[in-house]
Image (cartoon, rainbow, N blue to C red; front, side):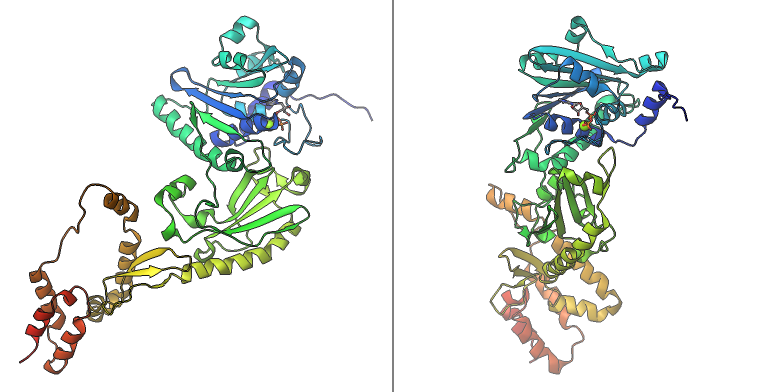
Length: 476
Ligand SMILES: Nc1ncnc2c1ncn2[C@@H]1O[C@H](COP(=O)(O)OP(=O)(O)O)[C@@H](O)[C@H]1O
Ligand SMILES: [Mg+2]
């Protein structure tokens, strides 16, 4: 047998790795992974639609010229390498594949031991040469790069610049497209790196800014609210912490926005899998349990150290990971326990709080955790009468009442109440209105039942405020 050296065609290979399936947010996250692995405390992302670039500046350890050459090399580090426990890299590809999935020109400038080196992959140059021709920038070329002054001001660090963003902006309104896309990036990295951003114990604190505005962490477990932390367990150094979110009615709109949960809570239930405390996959039960409403409040944090990489099926983009079967089997029990707690939170809405005898239109309920809920009283005689008259509409009517109650703008009301404006009901009920309602309520009622019915209504809102009117309706 004879070995034939068969290196890949540079242009073809680079082109095909562009289509590996990165989105802009996942590509950005990969660049930040490298900064974290280089022990950076700060990552500053800058973008300028008018100049069509995105730049990432970190204050990590930086690279020498030789290290930078290796960093730019495809597969410069092997997945089989032993990595530091804080290393979020794996395949030796991310820097190149993530960057070139979004742009045609990738420049990396790094400062270490007071020396600055810069290297560039320019796809058009590679295409024209069809060789692995990495470009080395001279000092004059380096000085033309955006943000280079910022890098020079640091003791050490790395600047990654994406130019010719051919995949990201495709004609049309550049400013708008870029703003929208970068907004998605912000939400993604706020979630993926939330434990780094919130300064979790044992992690080097990290700040990320986008055009100088800090990225705030989004904690998927809403630990600043009344999230219940369930019993923690672990096996084979894999740590599992289940959380139960508060009932959605206790969540503020800002919480929903923080989580990007403008759609559906259920979509985000399930496992939150962290590799070195960086979120890899989330909102997935791996077909262990159906995504049903009852367990939609359950979220399970799973921490796996890097040495488990080989057991997980982890893709280059780190956007999909499938835990080994044996791990999943251990999780069944946790899921079962948690689903039943979740069910209880939904079922146990709360007990009635108002102690007077009056049947109110709105019930004020107190939940077990002490929070207050409001619901429309489905037992109110006016509701019951309507259902008696149109039994076919019962379900629909009850749904409508639920919708009204659940969309009560509590936060806005609170702001209004604390503000200087007076607040009131849109249509205050007059005595005439009440009289008309009363006529409707007792219409067609046989005389022998009427007196008793009117007595009952003395304890029913809004009639309870007009006892004399009720007495006047009584047959003589
Ligand atoms: N911001 C950075 N600071 C210092 N070194 C970096 C930085 N980005 C990349 N590197 C170096 O380049 C190497 C290759 O990066 P990459 O292609 O993302 O693969 P991986 O992260 O899987 O090793 C990294 O292992 C690291 O040594
Ligand atoms: Mg990497």
